[in-house]
Length: 504
Image (cartoon, rainbow, N blue to C red):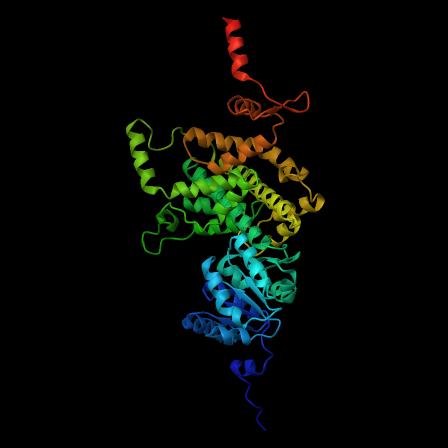
C-alpha cells in the first residue's frame, strides 16, 4: 500500500499552532530577520504595506528550506494570525514611519501584546511610545539590531530595552536568532525605557570611530609606505589574525582584493569610489549626547567631522588648488624614509591604541547615561553581546568584558591594568605614526584625537587653571584653589593695573 504524500508547507502551516511572533517591514533587513527566526524553528507571520515585499519574502522562504513563514497583506489579518500574547516586531524606517505602522496595527492589538521596534530609533521616541503603549496595556521594546543584512539573516547582536515582560515573552526566540559565541547568545535585556536604542546608538558611534581609524591606517600605509592595494590587503589579513582581529579589519582586507567589475584593466574597485562618506544620524546623536553629558568623546567626534569634511568634495578640490598656487606642495610635505615592515608594525600599534580610546569613550558615555536615567547598564554584559554578530565585534571585546567584570565601576578602560600596560607599550609607535603623519601633511584626525585624549586623561596637571582665570576675569565665574577650600573671585584688571603701575 502506497504511503500518503507529505503535506505541503502551506498545508502544514494551516494545521500548525499560530505563530507567537510577527514581523512588519520587509525590506532586506526585515526579510532576513524573519527568515532567520523561521529557520531557527519558530513560525512567523510577516506583513508589509507593499504586497510585492510579502510575495518576495514567501518566495525566499520556499527557496531557502520551506521555512515556516506566513504572509499577510492587511494589518488586521497579520495581527490576528498571532497567538496571544502577541509580539509584533517592526523593522521600518525610524521616525514617522514607525508611528504610522503602530497606528495601523494598534486597533487589533490587545492588552498584554507587545511591539518591538528593531530600527535605529532615537531613544526618546522609544520612551514616548512606551508611555503611549502602556496607556493601552501594550508592552513595548526598542531593540537595537546590529550586523547588517548578513547578521540579520545568520545571527545579529540584539540590544532590547523597555518592558522586561515583552522581552521574556520572546526571550527563547531572540536567543536562538542572535549570533552565538562561546559565552552564549549575543542578546541580553539591556534595561528599561530607551536603553536598548541608546546602547545601539553608542555602538554605532564606536563604529564611526573604528572605521575612521582604519581608514587613516590605510592612508598612512599607502602614502607614507607606498604599499600597493594587494600589500594592504595582506597587511589587514595578517592583522586580523592577532590583537586587531575584528569584523571591520576582516572586511577591509577583502575590500582591497576586489577588482572593478566595470573596468577590464583589473584595477581595484576601492580606488574608483568617490571619497564622500554617507551617514544616517546615529554618529551625530552620539556626539550630541556626549556633549550634553559632559563626556569627552574626541575620537568619535573626529570621525563625525571627518565625514562632514569628506562631503565637501568640491570645496576640498578648490582649496587644494588655491593653496598649491600659494606654494603648498601637491603631495607629501615631507618624505618619510622608513622600512615597510617597521611602518606596518608601528601603524598596527597606533591603530590598536586608538581603537581602545574609541571604545573607552563609548563605554564612558553609556555609563554616564545609565547614571542619569537609572538604567543600571551592565557594561561587561554589553561587551559580551558585541562579541558576535555586530559590526564592531572584535577579539579584544573579551578583554573589555573581563575589565568590567573585574571592576564594574572602572573609571576608564585606559586605567584597567591590562589595557594600561598595552597603551604604555604602544605609545612610542603611536606617537611616531601621528608625528610622521603631521610632518607629511596627512590628515589623521582620529588617531590624533585618540592620542590627545590619552595624554589629557593621564595628565595630573592641565593648563585649565589659566582658562578658569580667564573666565573669572571676564565673567566673574570664580575659581577653586589647590591650597585651600572654597570658591574665589579676583579683581584681575584692578590688580593687573596696580602691578603694571608698580613695574613702571
